[in-house]
Image (cartoon, rainbow, N blue to C red; front, side, top):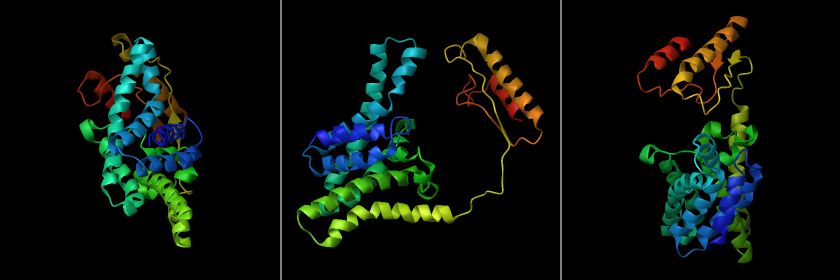
Length: 281
């Protein structure tokens, strides 16, 4: 069954923070497991689900390559398609491994096959760990709080287990199975989440510790900051703003710069790396 894989993948993508509401994953997960439970080509079906998910959730790659790489829009789409096709291989692997399990155990095994394959995606060929399925809960700190214990991989398991458990309970209702089979599979993921949420909420809150910080924003355009003539100026701007922020409050604990603020590869020795180290010290 192909359409649940495609629709489930797209819905899961729109549940990613910044794309849409997190609760879309509650509809996506059962559809994705439906594609696992009813398919004759599990690897291809899983790949289709993964491709649908990644090609939507990694849309920003086209914008970066088109706007800052100056490539034609039609050409800029190609890296997105290639990367999505590669990442989808690990979904296909999860579907295939699930199909090997005994039928009665697949609804339990699929969440762990999915998280295992996706964790492998994060390390294979240097790794591309962007957008694990559990990230769909990260937009709401309360809902994502169990990650303090189980990590984002654990959130992936909870989301997938909700989907497979919902499907298992639904089929139990259709077959008029025992009341336990109608309720328990559907309830496992929510109950686990409640338990983990309660543990996190009952833990130390660190409310007696405050952190004074300075936020630095250089506003260096992406399309010029890597030019040779801008490298010194970029570092100088960030150093000046950081020192100015620190001078206003001598008790600052942390200085925060934007992602990829500095135009250098830190692992490569250079004059600019030494300059950056001096600023940090």
